[in-house]
Length: 75
Image (cartoon, rainbow, N blue to C red):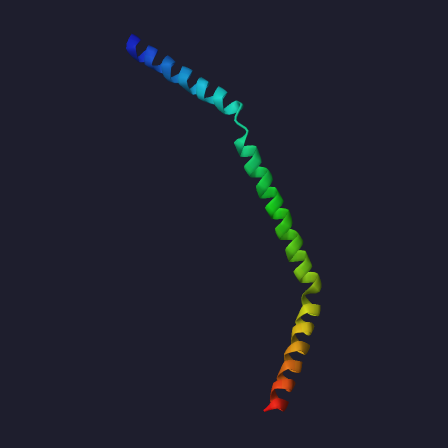
């Protein structure tokens, strides 16, 4: 019974030491910051595409029809 008690205390001590080591670890904070930056960039790209989507579609349509008319007239 006494052996189980000491084994349990050693396990608790190891757990506490592991938690103390994690308290000073700041590598996860950097990963979270990079994730937030990537998310903000994605939101900005999506907003830009939504705002300019119709204009870009019209630009490509007019460019395509101009290229189509030039290629058909040269044949």
